[in-house]
Amino acid sequence: MKSRVGQRRLRLVVGVILVLTLAGTVGAMYGQRATKRLTEGGDVQRVATPTVPLVSVAPVSRTDLSSTLTLAAEFKPFQEVNVYAKVAGYVRQMRVDIGDHVRAGEVLAVLEIPEAEDQLQQASAGVERAKQEAHLTYDRLAEVLKQQPNLVAQQEIDQARAKDETLKASWDAAQSAVREAVAHRATYATMLAYSKITAPFSGVVTKRFADTGSLVGAGTAASGQALVRLSQLDPLRLALPVPESAVPNVREGAPVEVVIQSTKQTLGATVTRVSGAVATDTRTMQVEVDIPNARLTLAPGMYATATLVLDSRKNALSLPIEAAPNRKGDTATVYVLDKDHRIQERTIGVGMETATQIEVRSGLEENELVLIGGRRQYQVGQVVQPKLLAQGMVR
Image (tube, rainbow, N blue to C red; front, side, top):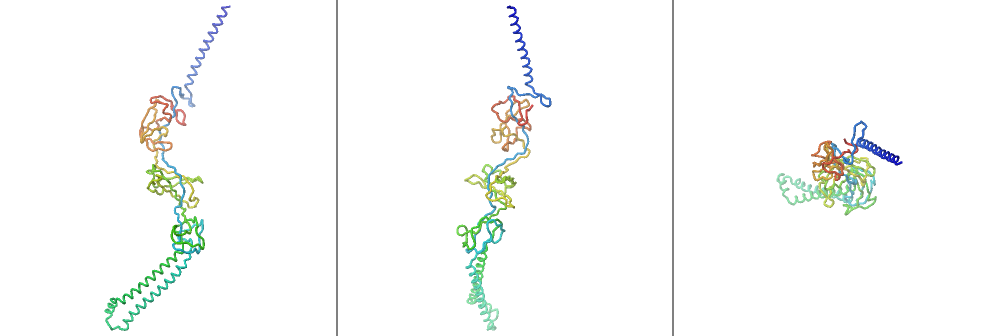
């Protein structure tokens, strides 16, 4: 009986040993397979193990870089003015209304100025009287010579007449009266011409302030009433408040991309003018962009966003901005992988910076791999397994 029990125990121990041995063999085979994986091409690709961390990397590459600045702005008329009368009078006729398109020199309104008309008539009559009086004065002098032709020689008579202060004064007074009368007539004629109010430039009437029969005064906003407001809408101005930090990089002719917020329309333009002065209250400089508006589809007051190109580089060596988080002036520190996938720390020269890329001026070669993010998790000299961003595993 005891011998049978012993045999059973012996068989059980042998069975356990065989199971454990088989399990160890299978585990070793599975472990070896777990460290290797076949790619589609049949090559063996190593899989990261707990002792070789997987890190995200990006290659140093060449690309076109551009530094931009986006600002919000509002469209304004290229020119805008309230049109006033130069002389006081009643509005006899309003020839334009809101929305009318006019050309430079076109008559906008006609005034009635009774005083000017009367004064012009009086001045014209005064000119005629002065001319008649001057003619009578000359006739008197000529009559003296006619009645006494042999009194003295003609040359002596001319000399005597020139020296005769009385006759000279009479003649000068007559001529002065003529000139004064002519000047008065010209003044009143000019005033009467001011009765026609004309457009100083081509544009659109955007406001009307007076009606037929209104009494308008001469002058400006402080002393008179405007008749209409005239706005030039082609082109329109887009005024951009450029911050002080970007002022050195703004220049006339620089490309600008304008997006109309209401229509989502995108327009290409260039910087038209730069004020050249930074406002002390806002620390910004006004930069203007002219936008063609021949069809008048845009209107003053509409909002837009303008993207200025401050700087650009063609085919520049660059890397993702996340690879150089500790930039100091013209240098930055990055983690680079050597051929054995070992981390190296390197100080590089950097230049222009965009929202996603940073220019590499020195310290790196094209196609070298740099770590992206998570630098505190790794140490210089550590071996890692690189993985290209959005490109799969790196061998």
